[in-house]
Image 1: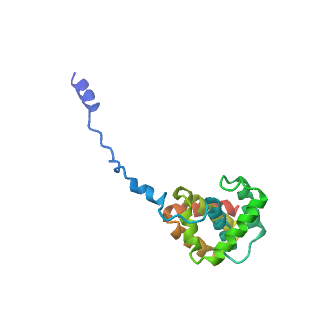
Image 2: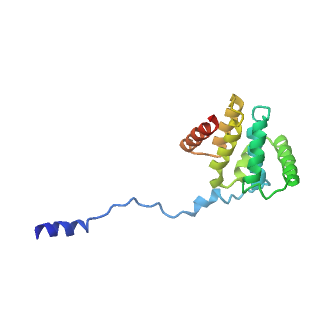
Image 3: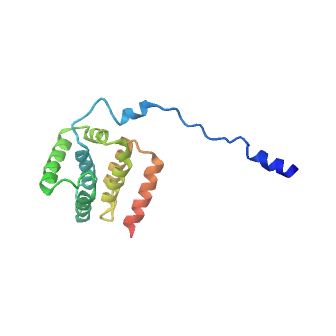
Length: 167
């Protein structure tokens, strides 16, 4: 009988759970900023992947192939035909040339939950030719900062992409 009492008591021991943070609508501020800019999400996405390819001053054939493949499979760009992509490419290049804070504007235009994936695409494009030069690394570092990525998440993505492109 004493053993049964011991077992039944264990059923009702206090359970300690981590307290969930309070509900806070301020977290949505970054998703719905009050200072919208004129970059659409597809334009911002295209701008960043092109910038990754252009970071070292040349666009290797492998980088071009990666960008074309990404444009055809990415949900952000695949709805655009070749003419629309070409037109968007011109818009993006002009804005980059004309605006000193183009990187900040572009990163602000992207939804927060897209930031890490966009970084991964940019890194993948930079590594596509099998070489990562200082100018590309500098661009990627700026991108990590401007997108406000968690350094550990960026490090993990970097490790995975470097393994993917190594073999």
